[in-house]
Image 1 (tube, rainbow, N blue to C red):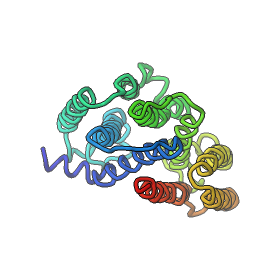
Image 2: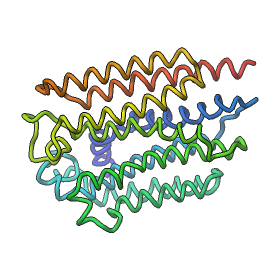
Image 3: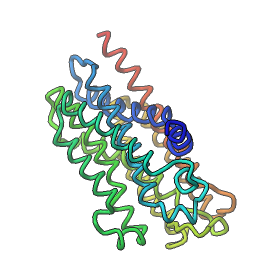
Amino acid sequence: MTKRLYVYLSEMLPPLKCAAVSVILFFEIYFMIILIADLGTFRIGIQELVGCATIFTFLLSLRIADDFKDYQTDLVLFPHRPLPSGRVKKSDLAALLIGINAIVITLNIIYMNNLVYYAALMLYGSLMSLWFFARAKIQKNLFLALVTHNPVDFIVNIYIISFTCIKYDLPIFTLTNLLIAFTLYWPTLIWEISRKTRAPEDETEYTTYSKLYGYKKITRIILVIITLDVITSARLMYELWTPGVIAVVAAYAWFVAECIRFIKNPKRFALVSRIEKYMFITEVPVVLIEIVLMIVYSRT
């Protein structure tokens, strides 16, 4: 079983990459709240490690749940993947799912201060795995699947925000925290839509937004969402480090130009690769700025 799980994780969700994403997401929000609140002190311990482990486990659980949910579809469209190809068994994934969640649930109960928010996150994830008891309607409707499933990323952000605020005795429901939650949510929403937006000649049997609504219309919707993203990102960057607003606006201008290129000439154009670059350009500077500010902060 160990070898089969190694194959599965290597192909579907490389652990090191997932761990890096989990740590970056957790501490990006964590430090942002601390810096904007201008706290006099901060301390990192086992709770923060449990928080990172929770995000990691949750992302892995979603991946496994998706493979269970899409098994019949993957047999036709993606037969090379580990589960439909038989290189990993359902029982392997079930054992992994139960094991990692048993550990993390226990750790949250023992160490974390935001059990209500953790329960909400787990409840939402569980409902997603069950198609919200409306599989017949949701599975065949790509838009309905998006609006019911994608908000889970927003709830993950709230989990991190709630822990940080409770730990440092800060109010949870504030405009700043709402901006933080949305700012870290928009890119995942854009990525989810863009990865299912293709040029006409690149369409296959796989259902995409561009096949249903046309690639031009979907690209314009992406532009609307990314405009919301740059507004919230620039507002938060202004709070952290004002010159950083320039980088945010520059990245936005570049992505808008790329979207216009795609609309005019979609041939051999992977829109999702552009959003991944946009996320890198906007997220990495924020993390670096936070690290520098936290180092300065800890020495004063």
